Image (cartoon, rainbow, N blue to C red):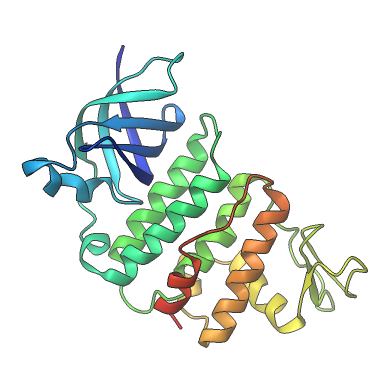
Length: 241
């Protein structure tokens, strides 16, 4: 059956000499792997840019529930994403976020709230002007709410440490040792309970940005058991060091 589906590209891998398999998160069907034939051969190779991470496509897909790999019939870009195509820093961020999303929503079913958040985030980031060095941190902090492990809101001024295991801000360092320093906890709270516009006002140096990113990825690894090593992490750190 041919179905009309809107999907956000997470990752692609080579398949045979000319095809690719693209991992999407879709609004209509959740996670989906799609075979795209001939995309690395001849004139079609020029269109491979539309299958880069975080691009949004409107597709017609031969979808069969009993088949793990679906077949693409037709597609059009839902949004041209000139920023992601033309800014190497944004492209690096997109690759990183696509890899994280592939790890944490691997078997995600239909979740339209999550899809709509991702779509809004892509559109915001693609058109964002400088500064946007904190966007990936803000994205991961806000994404946790859609994945079901957002921390409890920091209510008291003396809640100084972020407990990574329990997902809350606490007065004293927890005995299990999985917590974030006072300085990093204060900054993390601004990201967890802020917005994309607000993150632009947070001034971080390269080390602070790296430390916060490491803390967030550790938080994700604790609360999403399927989380794996993110290969693009070091490149991501270099981009905004």
